[in-house]
Length: 637
Image (cartoon, rainbow, N blue to C red):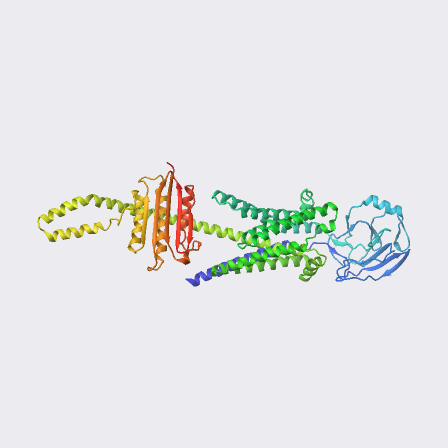
């Protein structure tokens, strides 16, 4: 049987892994496009066989550029008025188009000497094909293009492959960093492809965070309806809402919508993780949670105020930088939470397995995230050097903080969904167990009630038995009298050992458990002074008393017989309130509260449900060698 169950688990795990790998593969395929523009810029790592010519003091000079690592373009010597770059087109792209940015520099494009584009319409062309630009030409250029950055896109003829492409860049007199304008080549699908592909990833992530926000809000409302106010659930709800907003502001759609005018992304980047930091800090049990909460609040306020001041002062270059203090605080919260979780969840084998499972999931999530970064940056080395290390060198911790927060965010979604599933399964299991225990309690109640009826019959018939026995003895038939006594004694065994309460239901339930306790030499004290009629459903009273006394009896049975074992039960009416309490001895190692497992430990859950039903609470007190429960049930008069 164990082998069959093992094979089932193996097959289930294999199916789950296959589906997961398939979904991830499709997702990555959707997030990678082969229709992006190819940048033709010469760099230290990649060359496109451009030849360079400079226009310097009216003379055309060949130029051999020098490239440096990390520099994406070549700097032209001072005094140069124009630069021409020429190459033979080797790309073969259907419907090819050239694209470049136009800001302060003027551009002309030639294909095999034929002019395809020019930013200057009235300028005179001199020797060598360069324009002799005057101040009037530059003034006309400024009036036509304005001061905004423009993206220029032009079509190439169908037979462009193998032809010579020339791009001439002209510099105004006040050009600070003259450099050639390198075009990129693509087609009509290229600009749309990047928008659509990036939208797939962000839309999926946005949908997940929106769903999680609704889920947390629903669970908070559900807990509130069950008289349990969980403020930390609201923190998770706020966190997922901010993550949803953050990812929405990171999309191309935000750039073209009014959302970009309403929300500042750099300010939001200082806020969106704060609710999760607070949640993690408040989850801690040690004293350090309060200093962490204070640090989170103070640092968040500092970052936001500092960001607003920088924006208002126009210091846009520093406005988007996240300093090392955010990184240090993030590590402090994560390390503190991780250390405490490790210590807290290493007590039992099941906890260690769950902790190991989450560790494996964290590694898998990190690997998937790095694969996504590799696809975006071209290689892991490029991401680590240019994406992580280079910003750190200039004091910008935003990329490394983004890396850690992304991993934490994805793990938070996985952990929360897992815990919600576990909570749902546990709740369903608890409901089933409570329903079964309630059914068993009612069956016991019916059996005890039948026993009580039989006892009442015996009490009623006892006078007749005495009369008959007296008559037999008067006849002198001792043998017959002995047989009659033995027969009646068998029926008398059904009589309870004592009378516990005037209330029939309380009497038979108390008699069922307290008689068993007395038979095991457990000291019993009781004061069940309640009227014969109580305005409470029989099934509710039966479930409450049965679970209370059963737990007390089982706790005493687990003790050594040499120990002091006792049960003290008390019931009385106080106005419209029914006061119920039970105190019993217990082993010292059972004073810690344990979660219900394998059908045990549900007695308190059942009693708490009855207490909630009658607008009361169940007070549970655990001490060394002593356990007590009490409640005041509000009954209608």
